[in-house]
Image (cartoon, rainbow, N blue to C red; front, side, top):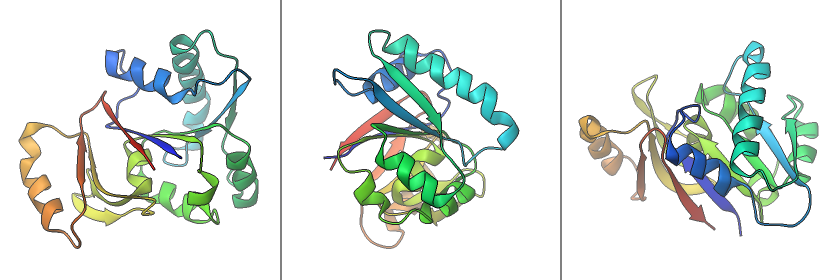
Length: 188
């Protein structure tokens, strides 16, 4: 069973929901836990400071665990091997389109994620959803469809009209609206 932690965005904020998210992402196993960090939704020059920030978030919220970290490789074959050998795949937010494009190159991604933790924030949530609302482009777009939901990150009460649009878009699927600093868990 795959555990999907789908986060509403802004994982860098020091709020209780983010602390719970990083703690929940680390499985309860008694060995070194390999965490693959995916930044395809961001510019390469941002990788070093984000990597340091993410390592600190994981370590500070699971200090008793032995954690190993790796940044996802651009090469689809190497990325596939990295996913296969990881326990946790953490996908940070940013621009969803290049993220989905890169993940689409990984053959059998859904199968590769089996029995792992997939922790996706904002664009990371959108990538695995069937459909999502793009905050940047103000339209509904298609994700990889690994989790059969319609997703909406960065949600708040002022955006109810978006929920109405998602509700009538294509087929009937559950809609998950997630606020910044909060997350939902789906196991499948």
